[in-house]
Image 1 (cartoon, rainbow, N blue to C red):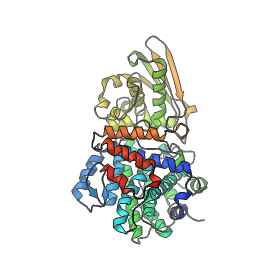
Image 2 (spheres, rainbow, N blue to C red):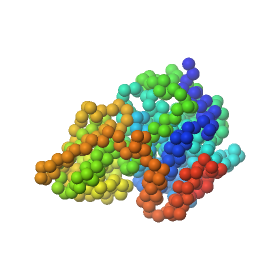
Image 3 (cartoon, rainbow, N blue to C red):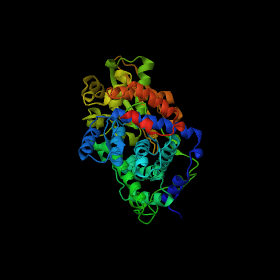
Length: 468
């Protein structure tokens, strides 16, 4: 039996833009625009700002751009910084069933590699079609890896942060393809990346900034893996299904090979990726949708709410409602990004949920905290889901005794309620505005136009230059 790592390498080596379904091309372009927008919004935030200063102090070879800066750095370092920016606001895309963020470990390193290839091996510019194809292949692979892992077990319960864990080989193959690696070198790139794979979920439990840093570690390691493979360094061949392959060592041998490889190269999981309308953990979104619907439907005055009851499945309750003291009174923005009570309170109080609601000053807001103090969370086993964002139900009891409830089964932004390209463009411009004006709206508008017509772009560096 051929190891799935080899099958993935073969797929990357042989794929063409013409092989991609039209809907995959379109969602991939949305992912690219979305990722660039959330990276802009992450500029200067805690985590990426410290990392930027480290890279600046290292003063390495000027290969690839740091978003929001005239500074160029070695391509893996630049990609690490930019990926950390893109993940800092927890506003990046998500595959709900695989519970991971594909674009941060595909789009960001692909763009860094696009700046590198002409300087390293004279391959010439990376075209929009090259970029779309590599990102689509990478998104498909990382989602398959997540979907195949531990059938019947929620990824949240495995303890791994799948974006980081599987981001290493995903970045390695995504960037390796753009470097022009053949199948054999792509196999080695996968193996070198596997030798580095890591990433856990304790950062969410502890409200630590390392939640923002994980994908950047993966991106840097994956790019180095591809560059080492290009230099003829070898890695394990049977990285996924071998005697000491990833699924045996990291996942107790519990995986679904059919999910991993079925219709590889023909069906693309990127078409099932959700784009976020709110800058927080995707598991919070159904609760936010329910709260916003109640506020709109009943013209709710949040100051006259007596009690708020939020009901979720067990996995969401464990991750996003406990420990209750950190979720009801967030210690920092990371806690708030992973708190259903905070998301619901913000939605009820302001009638929207935006990036300004997840800052250090926002989490001290007395009105919002007064609402979270009125909140009670419950588990309903009928809302459990081992894969995908769990439904949520929000009930309000008013001072006059009236009560209303709304249940949301499918959150906005999911494939069944997909954001349009115009929605993505609006979100992109909001991110640019939030970043404080270092990127002009003229450049932002030009970026939207380039991505909209990306398949016709001959050199994607014209897009990258707009973000310096």
